[in-house]
Length: 261
Image (spheres, rainbow, N blue to C red):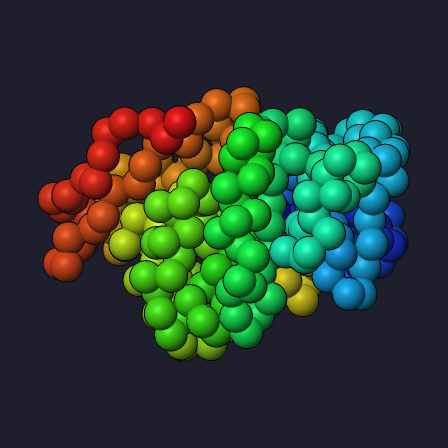
């Protein structure tokens, strides 16, 4: 399995505090069957600034130390970038990273709303062949209240990434319900952990895929896992299916079988 959204780099944000924390997270990931982890420390969210060059250096160091500890997991570089007015200029200054050096970038919305610049930002990024993935949209209050607003961002060219803990009820019933609704609607393309700590917020990736298989069927798991691989491979992500109202692992109605441009 591949996890495209984690906070495993030690001492950079509210994730792993030390190398020991990061090592414990890596070992826990391996025990779940995770082979590749993209480290996505918070950037430009008002609390943390983690520039591209610093993240790259930390990832290289962590891979070396994990290799010395015989932990069979590969760490790739990325950031969880808060949507902000200076984002395009920061890209030109080479302060930002895509996920695993791919065309995909992980964008975080504020928890309360969708900024008015978001659609224009998606448009400008796509012109530069940078494809935004919206991190945990199920935890955005505006999207919870109006799920169609995420569909509008997807229509504009973005992708959606739901968090394992949201699907499993870790953030409360309302967010859990929103997560499944967005997944069934075809607005979610990737499942990731947003892991911060093995105790406070672990990976639970296998557990989440198990819940999806029981609720929606094995084909959904295969598609979501494949999408995580496609991000790392820097390949196009396909449009997602829409689940039938009585989804239980049976018939599905597909929006499109074509890949997004």
